[in-house]
Amino acid sequence: MQSKTIKSSQQIRPIVKARFSFIVLQLIAILLSQFWIQSELPFLTLYAIVALETALNVMFVYLYRTNRNVSINAYFIQVVMDILFLTALLYFSGGASNPFVSLLLLPIAIASVTLPKHLLLVVTLLAMSAYSSLLLTLSPHDLHHMNMEQHLFGMWLNFLLSAFVVVLVVASLIKAVNKQEKLVSKQREDQLRQEQLLSLGAAAAQFAHRLATPLGTVHLISEELQDIQTYDESLFNQLDQELSVCRRHLDDFRAMAEQVKNNSKQSLGSQAFINDLRQEVQLSFPSTKVIWQVGELANLSLMVAPILMPALLNLIQNAVLASNTDNPNDFHIEITVAPHIANNTIVISIRDHGVGFANDTLLQLGSELVDSKHGLGMGVFLSHVTLDKLGGQLKLYNHQQGGAVAEVILPLLAAQPELDNV
Picture 1 (cartoon, rainbow, N blue to C red):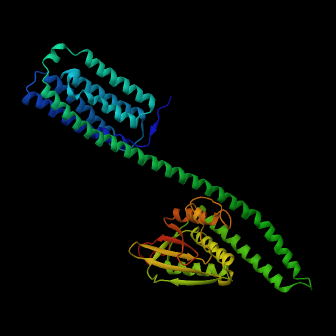
Picture 2 (cartoon, one colour; picture 1 turned 90 degrees about the vertical axis):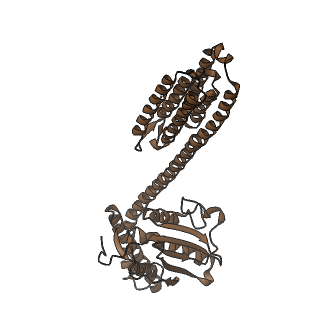
Picture 3 (spheres, helix red, strand yellow; picture 1 turned 120 degrees about the vertical axis):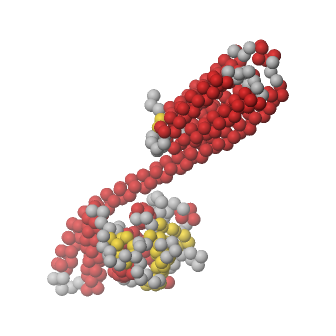
């Protein structure tokens, strides 16, 4: 059976570091027994056991000094080593009559949060066997000469030591495991989001390819209609206008796909980018009243990728649809552009005058495809992924005075006028 892999060796370091504290406490206990209590114990043997334990722990510090993948067996070795060294120290210092014998429970506590069930069972049986061996090898002479006052003091000190080890080791291990689980969960969500984006990208490419032929055919039909004497001129003009928009979008998509393929990016002045955005909004939504409020953008620039403009236009299109559908009598949207120099960001707020976001979809909208009033929230989802890829953020919320707000936060670049293109 394959051993379970742990993401990083940094999760095993708390055990190794805590063992040094445990070794210091072992030395203190031995020194107190030798010079204060003056017990008759094989102190050279005890010092040799502690020295060997210290040498092995220094080796583990060197072994796990860098982040790398380790197997669950590494945890198992650490716990078994603690049981063996603790059993050896107890054997030469009174056996089962030693008040510190209950420290054999600590490796079981560590194993319960780090090892799978089958290895936890092995550790438990090993600790029980160690305690049983100490009990069976205990001589009646040791029981007869046991000092109860020293024994009670040792039990009190053992309780303090056990509490210290539990807080230091077990709590830190649980924190490390929880942090790792959150990281794995976030990576899983990011992977799912990227898979959805790739699927949508493939569908968009197929749609663009299939759109080229019917657009060409309709364009030929419109040219033939020009030769017919009786036709509705306004209808023809509208048809021709819509075809021009479709052709322009198709050309833009092809150009954008090529730029995305080459991972093309450029540093552009914020004012120039907002001017381009205003022009695109005017061309894409000529019948929509847009109220612009733009702050001072001089000497500010940002990194622009070809997918940034479509992401913003998707959000603006959603605002236009919401205002037109929910509030046709007051059909307009508001776009506010404000630099935040302290945070080195620029904030673009897009507000519509519709009914706002539904409470049951507001938290999910943008992070995944969900059912919404105007579809599956595909445009918001694509914009969210695009902005996240470019280091930006997308915040969605309802305005206090009505309507919804899509707030885009983009990072600014350091002012370098001489580097306009990279």
